[in-house]
Image (cartoon, rainbow, N blue to C red; front, side, top):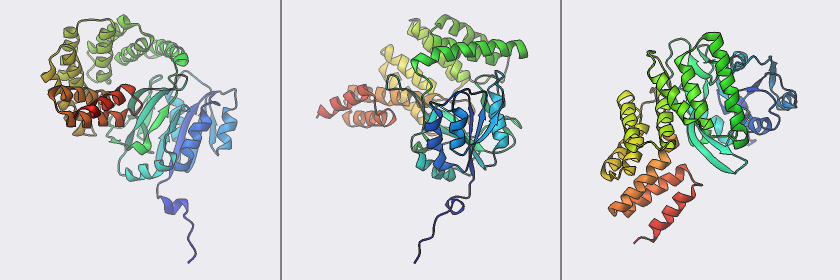
Length: 377
């Protein structure tokens, strides 16, 4: 019997569009396009004024090109790409992002087709130093519906312009993307650019508490921890009830205090406030545990690590505050492993360090701990 050729229509009922906003990305764009091409039926590239081969490269991959001048606004070009998309679903990548397993993307999206937005694993890497920097989750895949659009001149974010609700599901590891935009040589330039854009937005729209969040982010990256504390406290003391990103604010405040070598007891006060304000987020129980370890309150630390994992495993997908727990989950397992070792529970220590290695397979410290545990009889 002659074997039937599998067409795109029989392969999947979904039509998927890949969208990009780019400018002078000839070095990054080819790899990103190659990684997304097996999964999509259409590619839309909005170019904001490239003077290199970016447009030529995009066209060679079959992309539809929309050209628009850059106006210091990240949201408008993104929304132009969405408006031009004809797919049922949209994958929106930056040129310096690419899928780790391109051939698994379409089936992974199809399995979650009953949802509205998908948050996917993202790994920031510094290619110059060949190392992983951060693990987090990012909203990069969503339905092509008229109420999902980007907002914000800078640190633009996908928003439900109808009712503000953003229920999401977590994508599988098959949707992992690598992000190469955080090389040490590039980050300072980007942060200085962001500061200029915030200043411009304030002149146009007036000052808003969200500006303080972004300013705290920028100064955190620049290592100006006194300014981080200033802008975090300014945002947290705002009377605005709908302030988003409170979790990020507390994280920046804790890390700034730690970098300034402020007492653990003072850091712990901030963590208690974060837990009181955002009890549904697991990261602050983990942060409490880490600080309790520093204070040698190990039994309390153990209980809080366990509680953080329990909250994470049972956390509802309609929690609208962005959780940074995925970035520190490997630390939780590694710390639990050591606490179990101190208790004499080597079997549990091995299990926990194995979980940490699954999340961060290149972490040499975890590998060393695993080797030490294997020697214990």
